[in-house]
Length: 290
Image (cartoon, rainbow, N blue to C red; front, side, top):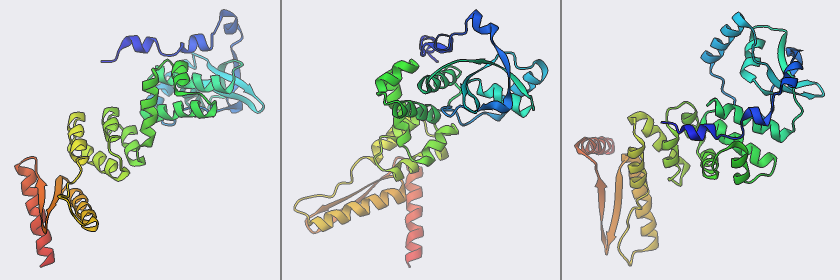
């Protein structure tokens, strides 16, 4: 359940960042849609088609009731807030749209775009993370400063930006809600991108919970043991290489232990089903070799 206190404390809100006074309301005017360009700092890139169609139907019947907010630029106007309304009106071939023209900086424009979308829960986790990163890089802000600007904790901003370190396949799964942010944070516990992607696929295929995923990460990060000393360095590397290859092939824990002039290959199985699967795989490989 979402903490309402956090939501109400998000940023300063659009009403305080772009105060719309009674005097402002008197100056709301119609502007040509052709003169409006999209916000170059808009963090949201994915507009849900179904919701956009619903908005279009509402605007078709009642018109654009709430004005968009824009700022003046050399070529016309740039959107600050109200991109969905703008897109809907444009698709409906409206020539004009009600607008309030405000004078704000680039930094304020990005802050406002972020806050508007976060407050409406319109950003997916990757869009939100990219917005924070853009705010930090474009205007040389620390993560702490970014957090204060948008009303988040520094930890929340830092954790969001960490998601951008994930491979593209994992990020896409997060965007499509195939995995949750909780899953993604656990996946980050794996150091190798290949392992992160493999685990993501396993989460989707087996519908793993976050707790299941934590167990998988613990299993995957358990170092294969190649014992005991003294063991030739080349043999030790070979043991490790074979163990890693077998772990990937069998998708379970594998250890190679070496003592003196002999060794052990240990395959760990979680249940009978996994045992049957691995034995079947070994038989198939043996058949191919023979």
